[in-house]
Length: 108
Image 1 (cartoon, one colour):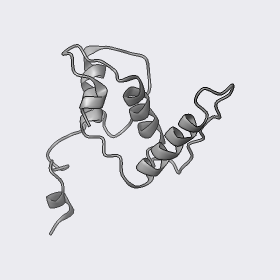
Image 2: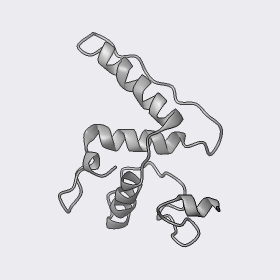
Image 3: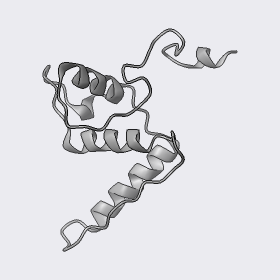
Image 4: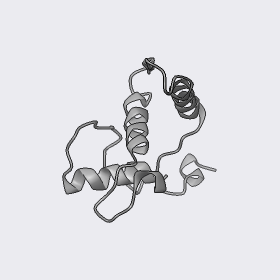
């Protein structure tokens, strides 16, 4: 069995709209929104992503209503997905709404 046979979408025949790089910006052009929607639709939160998201959210909940909120530090090697994780968490946190009425939390 080949790696490409394990995926629902063959990575050799379907290009990523973002070319594999998470771009964090405030732009809201039609292309940027389409790319963001694709990223959210295909976001898989397992393994280290899941562990990191749980730690950030548990810390937030523990300090909710308090006078301070500790920061989160996301570290990892170049290309490990730090920016992608933060981008996805940001849009899931605020539940970004798209022009077609869909929302970030309904996509992954």
